[in-house]
Length: 162
Image (tube, rainbow, N blue to C red):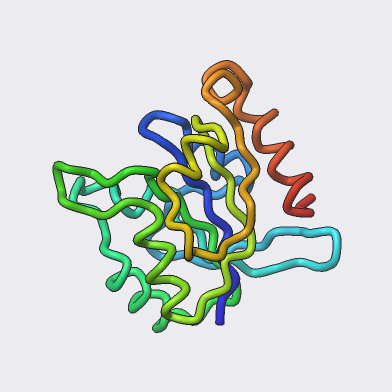
């Protein structure tokens, strides 16, 4: 049962840039393991920089396909980007539909960051019966104006990453 860390945001809220800044990782086809120092220990993590609904090929990855891929690799921790709303171009689902599938697969949702939205807009979309941690909200003004490294520093502090 992997622990999942989610960077969720609207379009163009720098999800990928923030993940790169948080981890120093760049997307590599051959390497999926990355080491992150936390306040308690060093964790090995799988990192998905591009949101599952976008991906580099523009087709997106379904929750089921991503879960299958992860079941083969068997990481203990996952950092993933999700687009808040669905992508109409490639018919992918919204972030909460992905999260529901992750929970169904017995994954533990550890932390969430919500970029480019406030608590009101988040709660309007979130299904009431979905039990997940309260996100760190980085609203429209903060996400658009704050430097990426400041946002990453706030996330590290909340998540206990060094």
